[in-house]
Image (cartoon, rainbow, N blue to C red):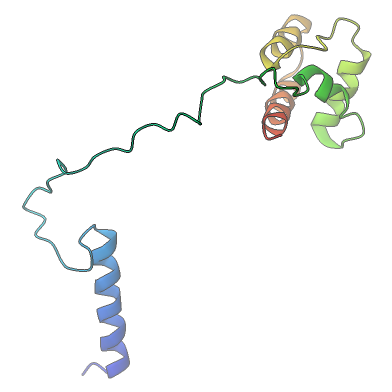
Length: 126
């Protein structure tokens, strides 16, 4: 015999599974295909322009200069910043790709490339 609490829980579970399965709370016959022709995608938002991986010319700091300011930071990003500061040929006004090319030309270890990827994500978030 099923208690009242278990029956209510079972009904809640059925309702949730139905919603997850896109049934809107009801059970569907899965042998019949779902008609998705009524789906209309939202038009693209013109405010979300794709500017690529680098900052635009709206006054943002270049990646190279931002990285040089990270010398007090701990971890691999701080080590990368210290190495960049010691490098006379470091591209100060460079984007992440230019810095990546510099690391490749110097034969940097994979940890520095990983630090560069992390630094790029941090820089892009500003």
